[in-house]
Length: 407
Image (tube, rainbow, N blue to C red; front, side):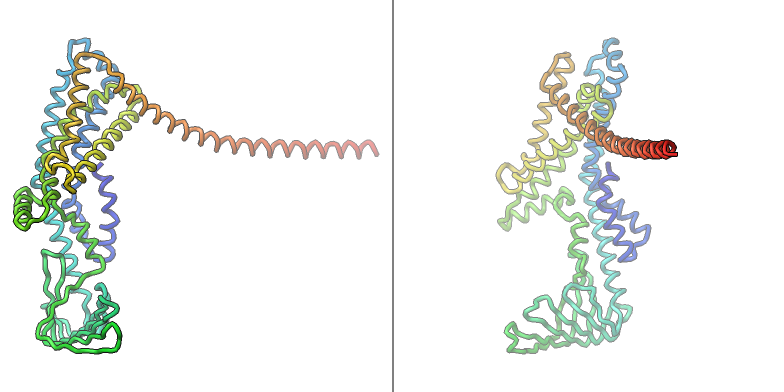
């Protein structure tokens, strides 16, 4: 499941290798840094899938019946599930509290180094450089210390009022916090044309700073997964404190702070929900268990996304918004465990699983029918060709017989 999420990043990494000369080790480090963001999602899903598949096979091979005949109750079978879910819970906490902020920060630094190296390498003397958004840069000399001499810049950020900037020298100054590269110019002139094209003015300066933005800088910042979710607990609390002092809304940061505790807790709920799901879906085999798992995951995460968005905009309480799905799931888990322990039938649960199984069977029939139709067309064409051949042969025999009669 983690590799499936990696597929979204492989194209980006391939572009970095081709366009920016990223080495193999840098590619490996990028994958390591973004792994915690994926583990935060896949660990709870893996717990649910492991529990469903395991108990599905217990029931399919009649091992569940053998355990019950040995006077093992459903609660007795939940003890190893409890230890497994606790291990996954602590692992998810480690990922959410420490690994995720570390991976995000390391990824930002690595991407920033790639941007910085790209800018330093491509600024060649006496060559028009078009690597920057809305800027054309020309320098006469480029020293190894990032000191540029004889700088000429065509600034088209505002197409209605373009600028020409000339400077005796400039220095490239990287800014790691913003993932930007600043060009600090000294002793230069700005030539600016007005919007009406009727006025032309010049401005002398001693110091002028320009942010050099590469074409993919915005995308690189998004790929760096910058956000409240990737901050540590202490940094989120500091951010909430500063935002309250400035009078800004803090619901978004509060939602992410609460998610760091709610998502790991899902491992415990998914583990105990997966056992009854696996037992009840044993008739459909492994494919049915996977279908039930996907349905539960979709329902849970859809509910989580809806409630957290309502919490961010202030419609419901920010801290409790991400716990609503867990509370509903907790009630369902307690209900299902009680039914399984008492061996009481629950029709709604069985009808839901049967409905999912019918959908899977319908899809199987659709695919099987399409295959039959395709093979049927082939046989029909073969029959038609064979029948046409026999008709031609009979016509030839009749002609021969008529010729013999005439003779």
